[in-house]
Image (cartoon, rainbow, N blue to C red; front, side, top):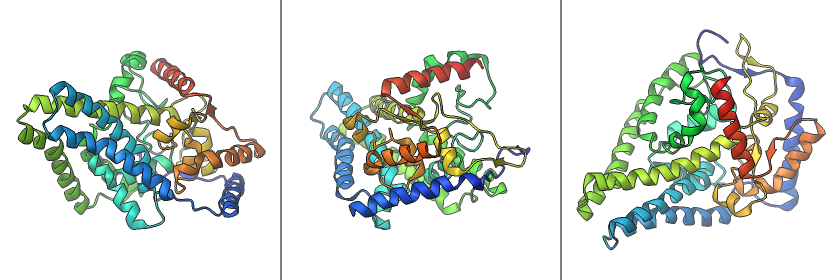
Length: 363
């Protein structure tokens, strides 16, 4: 690659691009023949109400002061499941624009990320634009690059402590959502540096103001308000705050890792000119894996993220359709002799991820 780690990467193999044209036609035919919309419709709206309630109702109950400290800690655990549920089933679809056919509804429910302590602008850049386009490419995909005490990319420098990362990784995963409080500010300088090569635009000043205001309101609501209303100490509120985030972070981060840091998911490197000799859609299949696709309840809770291949190929289609179109994607990939990486269960995917952590820790 070029001396700058943020060179602009291009997918150049036009001969392979016919696969996605055929696949897109096959998927479009499914929606047309069944006369259904690609967005979530009423099903995802009802799910959004449930997930938001799973987060906001326990918080409201805590503020009533009718519960003991131990019971309030139990409610923060439920809030953690709600935070993860909102992230996977509500915010994720909405920011991709697949929650609703109406932009204002997508924007409204996408803003639920602020309720989780995150930032919509940063998520759009880091997740929608960089991760979904340059999946598993070192230095550009933040999901695998430069993690504290973790080596998730074979291109990252190997350190002696990494040999133990399979032991402590899941503790670090639990810090995912709470890391929004400082990571979102680090993105300002990162995106400004990336903007020099045209990967992204420089960070707008209005978004910096929005970022600061969002964090202040979030901390005042989740940490300061309970202290005022319930006369709790800072440490009591902080403990509940951390428990909520650790539960949410562990769920979210683990689910995301099982899609890309598993056996069979490649980490291709661009050539010296920043080119990937592959078509974008095939790159998505080669860097992504499905898992646990037969567990309907689990799939419902995690927002269809067990169908990551379908999500990466069609992020503008709501996750409620992924199970139905997965057979189309699998069969079309088979017709083009392209591997379709699908772990048989959550446990199989988790075992594969742990083996990857061990391997990346020593090789």
